[in-house]
Length: 454
Image (tube, rainbow, N blue to C red; front, side, top):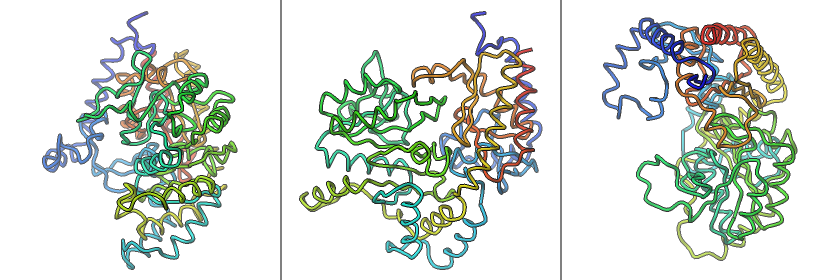
């Protein structure tokens, strides 16, 4: 039937949506009262505007989090598969990170000078991710911004090539999309006055011919990409695509920048380490310091040498890179603890087992019901997608997004004690996530889909 939404009849979807919203509201009166009383100071009632993307009638107010569990002020324990949308991928307040915070808090929070933790963190970054020359930022947005400045500086070229539907943080340079086959500012940008196409070109993921055509103009300083497209509906690279990017960028004098902020879920060293990729620059943020706001970006020694020459010759003045609070001792304490004691091969092996179990469980439900959906996994990151797959590019990923269906599922899952990411259908398995938690999520998913598909 053409009027179905992701295979579901609207007359079945809407009553379930109303029921689950009412169930949530009835079960969380303390959160409702607290939000009504305390949220008025914030624009639209939320500290950050994206909190409005949660589909529930009102937000649950969190009392505490530990491991892979949240507890709200209404007393509900929640199996957390959102995990701060990757920021807490290794679990909330892991013991080594909590210990590092307590230790450093007694010694000062920021003072613009290195510590022994900073020096050891540099060694550990190289051990984990490769022999890059590192710099520290507070967010991956900043890290990507600074990396692009270096790329433009050393190549003398103006443009970055990104992929349609990409997300690299709130970085103006990458807020472009394909419109009628041409690069355009993304629709919906707030207060955007500049023509972003002067500094960016966008093509579809997995389309090497389009990449080559863009590089042949000689305008592209760098290709910036995630190895797997995330933040909507995951798109995996086709065989040879990432190797093709490496080959084409080298041939046309552009830099190859990999942003692993979400794909650090892949395994030790991220997707780059697991699959032996060789970027010119490397960026990772979110969970790299166990949830403490931290990002790192690095360049190969060859790029560093080119940048040192550029830096020595440029006029004196502001570089446009860096923030006062970046590189603070608390970041380095948490970064060192995470890299040395949390982000280990043993940790990733446990996460991989749990995520494989989740992938198999969700896929079995979809197959049993004959739903036109599919499941994608990259290491510890799992997504169910409300459309047939696999998806090939950003246009297909955006078309596969089904907000009405996903809103019902997210609220219904939370009513059954499971939280997943609000912006898409992403689930993470942390080292603290138990088999029982995975099975509870699969059972809840089964219950809801069985009712939706009848």
